[in-house]
Length: 275
Picture (spheres, rainbow, N blue to C red):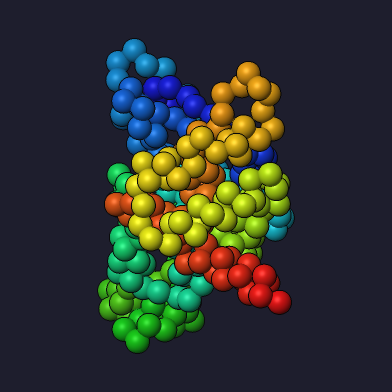
């Protein structure tokens, strides 16, 4: 592989929130994370040692939970692509042809920060075992092996109009487990001392705000010293943005905004307070 190796951290507290899984990310000399297809021998400069990756696992021999774990690592391995991958799995719970999937990925707010094409990102979900690809005819119906039987290659080419993609059982289960709503609830549960502050930030971001706005909102608050000794440095306000972004509760689109799922959580909490 090429360049440096960084470990993407998991998180289990305000300083360490998300997953206990550790993923190795390979970066080039400029610090950009390299994807599988980039980190190959052809891209290795002279004098850099190449390490061959192990063969990908055989999905057919893996049990359901192991496949869930593999797909989760695929979805979360690159923070820039995490929410795009999640949203693509959710979008493809209904079958879509390739142009529709590519257009959807390109429409995600997070895509503006990606250096990869929509199809490149889709391929990760295929390799991770979360999406199936089908050959479909001009009417969008799946072309079966029985329909191909006895046909020439040219006749099969005429029959198959394009490819369609649909999230499989493994991907659907991960969509449930990784929903931003559930990730937000988990964050609030493991960090009760910051519960009110997280909710306040979510409410504040129902309108587009800059990081400077959030810093002004929280700077000097006693909550920034919660759980810390008197001589410790306070938590930076940016930490709250970082943790909420990791849940999918907020996103960046020329400013920070609460996501649809973040709004759903705020609505649910408001309804509970009303009873």
